[in-house]
Image 1 (spheres, helix red, strand yellow):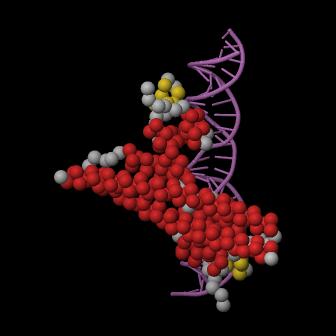
Image 2 (cartoon, helix red, strand yellow):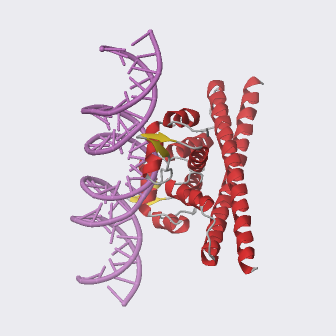
Image 3 (cartoon, protein in one colour):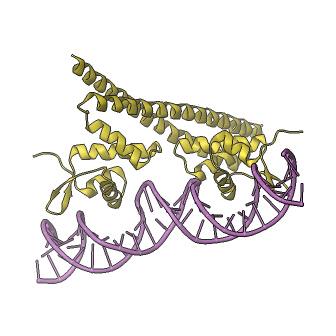
Length: 126
Length: 126
DNA sequence: TCCTTTCTTTACGTTAACGTAAACGTAATG
DNA sequence: CATTACGTTTACGTTAACGTAAAGAAAGGA
């Protein structure tokens, strides 16, 4: 009696098409159970989908998201694997922090542009 | 005696190909002067290129970057235009702030994953 | 039972953002 | 003066991330 979702449940919830969800499965990002031929999604599948879509909003490729999801999945068992995973994680972190700087800069410029617009409007009213 | 750049100057500086830069021009994002047939880039062209590439890192499409660059360029002269520009700006800001949240969340999770990895490593050493 | 919904697989189509190659001009350099 | 470096246009190719359409299975309701 566990929570499950149909493909169109998830499609509705996240505002994507079923085609998109099947496509992610083709790419190995999702592996739903089956009931006969129908796909049955677990809460964990749903979380993965959320992560993929968040990655998309951040401009990540599906392959990049796949890597992240895979990271979360396998804790890794031996030292070599763990060390490689850590360096992968730190790589992603560095990348995201660069992105934070870009975001901050662009927000600053937009704010600046907004001020100029507002000033120009005030000028028109004068 | 103003500062100018050749296409390969900019390509080198930003780590892209000349094809990429010409492609941006095709799309109307850049409009370098010409010396005969050769393209001559001004500091302002260079800035535009910087904005485009930053947009790319943030996952923006070229069309989206084009819109932003166009915004910076034309202050707009009448009230209607200014008001529309302001609403465009605020739209972008909202979008970027959502992206900031996504970034923050993902960084948090990565940090968490890192901690787990480090703990697992410590466990192996024990 | 028939109809409508929801699902399936298969497969070709599309768009953005370039890559790559051909074929040619020009300019400086050994 | 021939070669090397850098530039040009034109045009076809490629990859990611889906869209779209066809054709059919299964299940629940009127």
